[in-house]
Image (cartoon, rainbow, N blue to C red):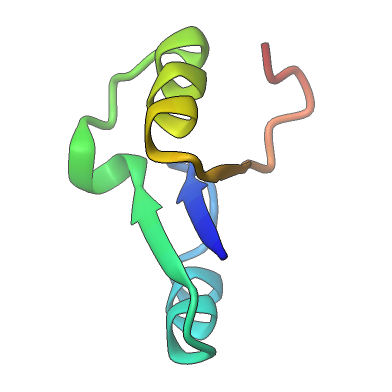
Length: 58
């Protein structure tokens, strides 16, 4: 599976997913100041599932 990890997803979690063979893009690697609508747009473009710990995610 392909995931897009928001800035608040712990690095060990991202690394574990990668170790398990998943493709994980990180907002930290793209631009840590991306707003929620842009993150969703990137995820749609990349066909990735958004991972976040935000309770108020847009």
